[in-house]
Length: 247
View 1: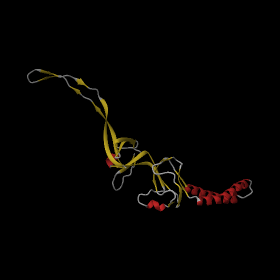
View 2: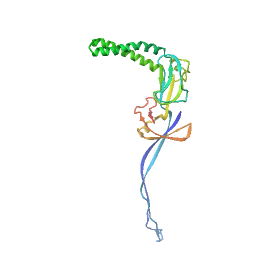
View 3: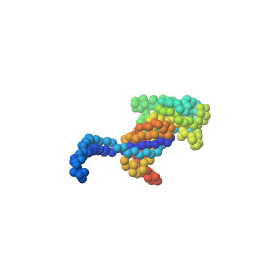
View 4: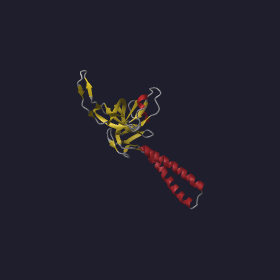
């Protein structure tokens, strides 16, 4: 979404004035009388605004997908739905997970027994560490399969794209298609929004982090959004010689 960013700088100026009074001669000897007026000096703020075009995007976005291809058993949300952090976005076929858990259970029991035996000095440290290493490796494998079987929202937001439908087989190759999201499910946090734009060399010297800005968007032309500069990249783009900022 295109947007316009207005950066306003401030400069204090001192204004005031008065009129003079006295007597003058008009060349014929007649005096000229003038009234005296005094105004109080005051400080005013002069705004110097510059406008730049930028891209209005979600403040936070994530493309989520399992690591391996698999059938989608459940896809409870549609595009536009709001999801909360930790909610299930997609549930994949769990055949691999079930098999891994079946292999893991006896290894976990063996590890628990070895802990007691090692505490009683009934087995050597080397034997215990071997069993512990096997247990930890298998536990990591099971945890990884669980994460890739049930895809959960890492933050609250809105579903903005889906690469497949419930019941289909998802494959990472789907993401290579034009216009496809980077994962099975894409979510975005739309409040607040962010704007990235490029400033020229002269303007960037007059802006800094925390400066207030006004943002307008084409889709809502009569609305002005207020924000502030989050960061200014001190490194110039080597091609355009501009400096990127984010608001």
